[in-house]
Image: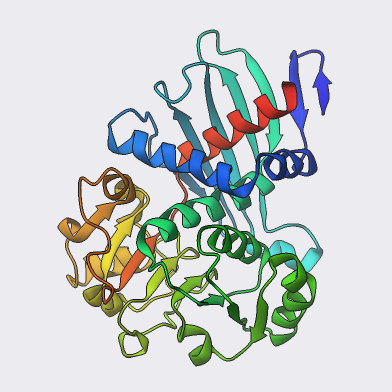
Length: 324
């Protein structure tokens, strides 16, 4: 960790952030991210919906947040950029920085590389939702997509559901799925089977982490008791689950204002398959204001778009871990 003398702030690299969160531990980290959803449900979160700046080939998102009841000392903003074509030239497709500030003086405290931050907090949010919504006896995790985020999704889900014995993994590029298995099977501590799409969907928990613009999971593939995590489709142009899937599920969202403009929820509303009254904020479920899973036969669906308070909590935890 370096200090930027002219700004009197510290610079935190992706590697340092990753090490700090691993020192905190996944279980404790997930518990802290859960507090953000609870604060939001209680009305204590000052977190506007993310602002998009789109170019022809990429986008930039600005995500400010302040959680005065969680920790009044800090506020901050993440600027995260997505450029899918970067992989052709060996540059990460997700790039970003987090600016952590003193909430009273607005002095800049830290500049953090945000790629690992985004990966960890997105996984942790899925961990919160899965712990609350998935059956306790789940044994199989279907994972669609073998990109960077998929490891963090698996890590978080296995933390909250140690009953899982097998991951069924599929990717459009089979070699990428095989490389994921070889790299992470020992670390995750469960069997990873590279399978086809139908086999991956046939799981107790199904998590999709793709940039798809056409749906690939359909109602006829569902079975009673499943829990679904829709992670990849975080914009109007993206979709992973057919909107009709939502007819058969209890729909839990990370942020109502963002989710109505994202993926299958956006399409479901547009096609009048669902209404906004069908969308249940995760924080409301955590605080028992509304019901999540009501029986072992329910299909539950968590829509993740990524909320700025997740980044703020991550930045606070990392900053205090590194500065003592």
